[in-house]
Image (cartoon, rainbow, N blue to C red; front, side):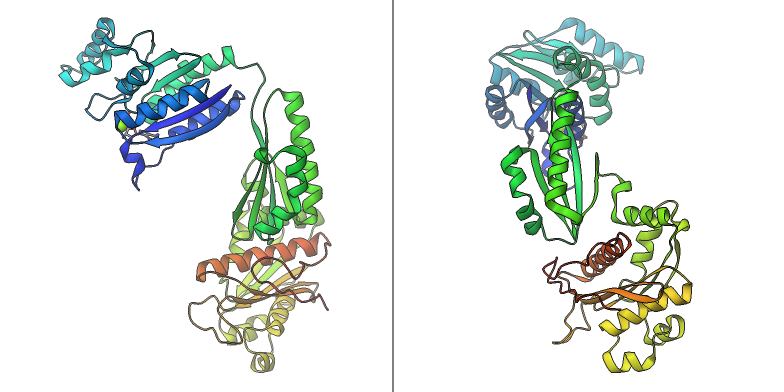
Length: 436
Ligand code: AMP
Ligand code: MG
């Protein structure tokens, strides 16, 4: 079964109202294995909605319309369906009586404008609305079933449960669902991820694999539908193939985009399993790495603490970075990153130490060290095991976030004893080889 969702409401085309109803509807479709062909957000214009409906009738077995069932002049969904399907709209006296009763129960007389909510498409089934005055409707047009739902999310929700889900349960083959697995990759550019997974496109089809890029965090999503046995087999096959193609760049793979698959959670679990601890000495990230590590519940098992060593004097007094090293190389330098990482281990008494120093901008850059220059280091038991020099693109916030992502990925690779990031990695990163 193939579906199309139409979210009707001029306000949804502005900047302050989001179409959330289509997400709710999509959730239900996926739970019944129904493929969503497309969705559209449309203005309250009868001709526009009718034109979209004609295309939808040709393409889909199921069309879900949200909104436009109210009593005011801009509520045109009923009229648009009537026009597109070529059917009449007639006043249903019992429906009218019901709406009048609803108002009477609240001690009100039904306003004249509400009469149009009692107009029913000929041949349609009325879907009762226990949460509001706008009844829904279900109409068969050729081979396509069309549902009209109210736009108020709470009312739509009620009708989804009372009408759409039972309808789908009867028609969609039992046990069919659409499911997605997500593989997460840190610090590889989107194009590099794409290049690595090209063979999987050929083997499984391009339409079931999507690459979603965020800052230093690419998600590869594989989707499968149908019955449980075939679906699970296909999902497992895609997941294994993608994992093999992406190699140790994958830091998490799972059924959803849940918190437990975040990079900090993955690193945290690895530390907890090994009974190891970490400490952070960070300059340009100003505590962001500590914040991310401690965002994970249970992080007290492995995070000992951290120092925001922003001023040079604090780098020396609290982390033990020698003033001479800062004077010789500058506060933003590989030497200082190394001293911060090993200092974090020593001062706090942690197994692992992270050191970060850089220029987040917008000021402070130079020809030699432009804004976005970041030096990172990871130490184990006070000895440096990995260093990287980055040139991160973007504004202050992106540089700081990118640096934190890179630091956590360096720690993950060190904890799992993976080789350090390759020189071609993300941004214009040029990690130098590990040396103790
Ligand atoms: P309507 O049924 O078109 O009169 O919509 C009633 C209310 O529900 C309006 O205030 C809308 O902002 C809200 N609404 C309509 N469509 C949606 C949608 N797709 N997602 C979330 N809210 C909506
Ligand atoms: Mg509306």
